[in-house]
Amino acid sequence: EFDPTANEPRVPCPLCSRQFAESRLARHQQACAKAAAKKRPKFDTTKQRLPAEARSLHKDAERSARRGGGGGGGGGTRGGGSAAAREQVPLQRKPKWKIEHEQFQAALRANKQIAQAEKAGVPLSSLPPPPGALARRA
Image 1 (spheres, helix red, strand yellow):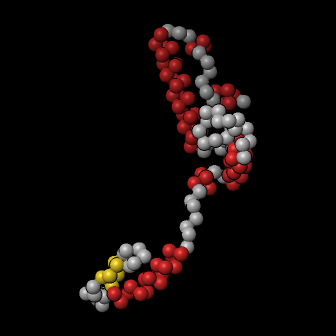
Image 2 (cartoon, one colour):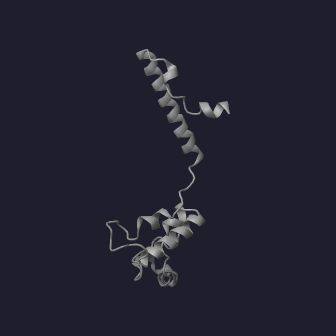
Image 3 (cartoon, one colour):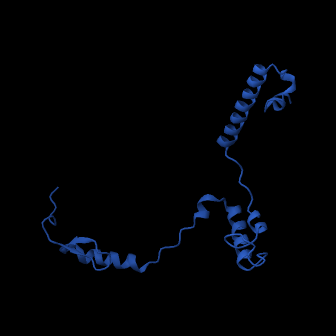
């Protein structure tokens, strides 16, 4: 519980400017110098958001765009490359929750249409079948 370095004067590290007790500064400088010598790698956000297959296709598209593969003199697209090169990245499959949400929204829209038709006195047979009705029959 008792910290013997609590009353020692604090001295700034010449590398990182953090304050340390005089007795700990030499030890910190060794670690700080080691950390400062290492270059941190650039963080690639595409690794986080794309699956492996899409990443490889994305890299291929970027390479062809950098080489001028279909750029055509800057056709007004930001980021370089052609639209065809960007379209090579396959669309990801929608998550289950998103599919269920879209189905729910479609069911709500269909029920709203039915309620409006009943209120207006329109026969329900004139309305399109509700989403999923055809799938249930099969």
